[in-house]
Amino acid sequence: MNASTRIAVVTGAGSGIGRSVALTLAEAGWSVAVAGRRAEALEETASLAGGNVLCVPTDVTSPPDVTTLFATVCQHFGRVDLLFNNAGVSGPRGVGFEDLSYEDWRTVVDVNLTGAFLCAQAAFRVMKDQSPKGGRIINNGSISAHVPRPNSAPYTATKHAMTGLTKSLSLDGRPHAIACGQIDIGNAATEMTQRMQSGILQANGEVVVEPVMDAADVARTVLHMAELPLAANVQFATVMATAMPYIGRG
Image 1 (cartoon, rainbow, N blue to C red):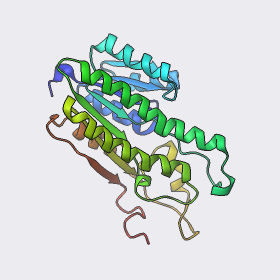
Image 2 (image 1 turned 60 degrees about the horizontal axis):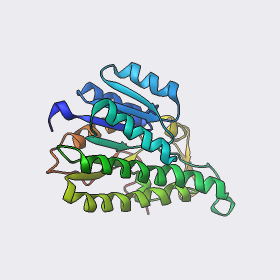
Image 3 (image 1 turned 45 degrees about the horizontal axis):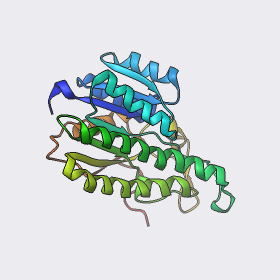
Image 4 (image 1 turned 90 degrees about the vertical axis):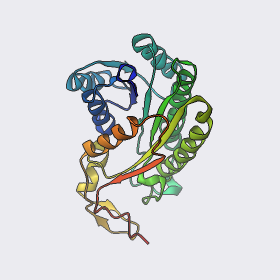
């Protein structure tokens, strides 16, 4: 990929994996647009990154916000070469399936799935029509795209759906030089996973402390996926803390 056209959009970039990926891309010479709901957090990401970073406060569940995000990026940078579709929420904790509220279900679905769809569609439209055309979309799946944790129906359902979205985008993007892959992450050390270091409910009812890995390890994997030529694609990658209780379940 030509270094002069390496323009990335990272959603959920105000913290955690999104921030780590934005910093890694910027360090590698990419121009990066960071998106998220919290303007102050985005500004902090930009200040840590240095380089050519554009902050665009965005609610990914809002079609007008997403339209504005990609219009702003195109106006500022001229094109989009990469979307890291990362924004997400985990949903309520410790709530049994029978006690889930409709509002909690909708919140997780709206952010994790509808938000990913809106951003992918906007990126797809830009990538299809720009010159030279094409680009790459990397969706943040999860280990939960494969197996659930207890009491995680909304999150798990959206992450399984993300896999279907990834496959559809891969197929529909072929005629337009748009590649799509998915990174499934297990136990990266972020705000969302702090509870794993104090103990998290297992399928057998036990509460167990789980190992975590540095989010920078995830970011390096995203960078590798992003910098492949468009003729090559990492369709699915699983990056996880080596000793987390995933392999060997059952």
